[in-house]
Length: 159
Image (cartoon, rainbow, N blue to C red; front, side, top):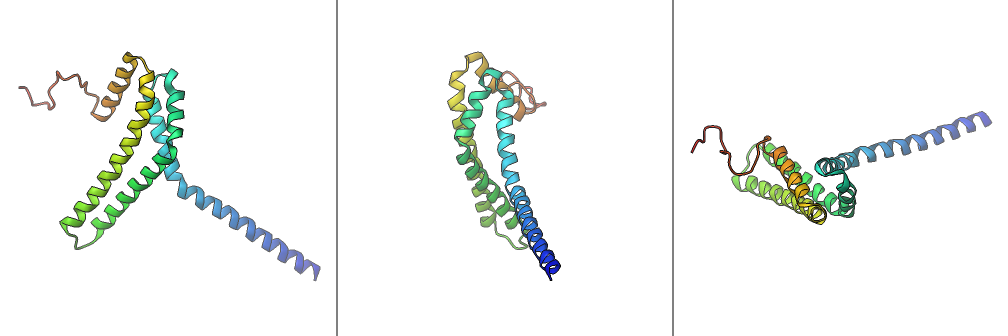
């Protein structure tokens, strides 16, 4: 009789421990995408920052973490909803337009918060480093071209 009771207790303890572990794993996976995205944004901003300004940049990002998470969630939700709209066999141009509008609004909010963080940190940098920071950021988004204004926008644009 006591061996049955011991096995039953061991089974219950095992079930509880496994339930907790599964819950932790699922929670970690669900929050993981957001955490990786926030870490990636921080790393991208800090990559271009001079080492003396890496710590103020990190602190500013941490100060606005909740705003950035909310904006990231909204952006992710808008993109998911847009894919749902596009999967519908019969969709109107108005529905697609509204989906794009929501995505654009969410992305604009995310950029607004990122720019606010940069606006807090960049004034503390010397002018040369600010310009270098901006130039590196533009090269990363525009195919590595210099944007000083004296280059044609397109290869065949020779005017």
